[in-house]
Amino acid sequence: MVGCGVAIAVVASHFALRIPRTDALQQRDCTERCEELVWFAPARGPGYEDVPLDDEVALPDSTSYLRRDLMIAIKYAAAKVAHLSGGHPLALGDMSDRNGATPGTANGAPRHPRNTHVAGRDIDLGYYQRGMPDNHLRPICAHVTDGVEQWHCTAPPTSLDARRTALFIGFLFESTHVRIVGIDGAAAAPIRRALQRECTDGTIEAEACARVHLGYETSDTGRLWYFGHHNHMHVSWRE
Image 1 (cartoon, one colour):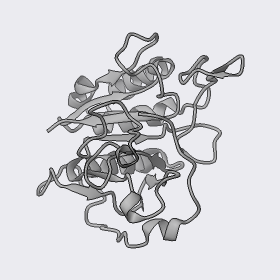
Image 2 (cartoon, rainbow, N blue to C red; image 1 turned 135 degrees about the vertical axis):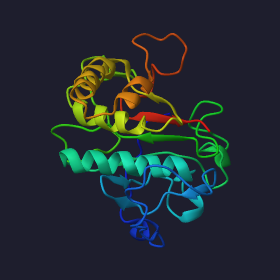
Image 3 (cartoon, rainbow, N blue to C red; image 1 turned 90 degrees about the vertical axis):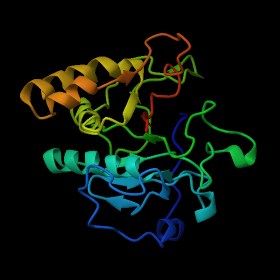
């Protein structure tokens, strides 16, 4: 659950073999081969874009493999946010390697905690942001003290678009298979307030509101949410 990489130019039209499946873009629930590990395709769709990381230079190197059911849920939530509020698409980050391993395993340096980003059950995504040219994976707050990287927000998340982020989270939890959404501790209060408003207004379904489970820490208690989530949120899936 580490930070963002820099998007690399074009990369063969971002692996040009990806073919849009317009019949699935608005689908909410998976109906067949749901556990299958699949390449997240198309790379761009309503409300989202898969932004390749530095080491994703060819298909075998891609870390954009996800369970089919989680892919469908991500597409659904992103499309619903775009329909309601417009704005820039949400950037997708690390998922799993082609063989289901944690990204970085092939190089002997997994870049996420043990047992995470395995078998397509986890995905990193940018936050929805204000005043930025896109919603790529980037810090939403100050995160450096006396020139030293802290790997968490050290001040309020001034570029966070709390409403759109809350909508995305709420729409994800329409599924009973979302286990948790991890965020930076400084982002928790504005996102929770936005969730409360959208739930009260009925924009997010009551059942989804009741299921929302956010993972965050405002101090390091060892639950692995405190560091590294100042530039992305993390979605974890259960069968």
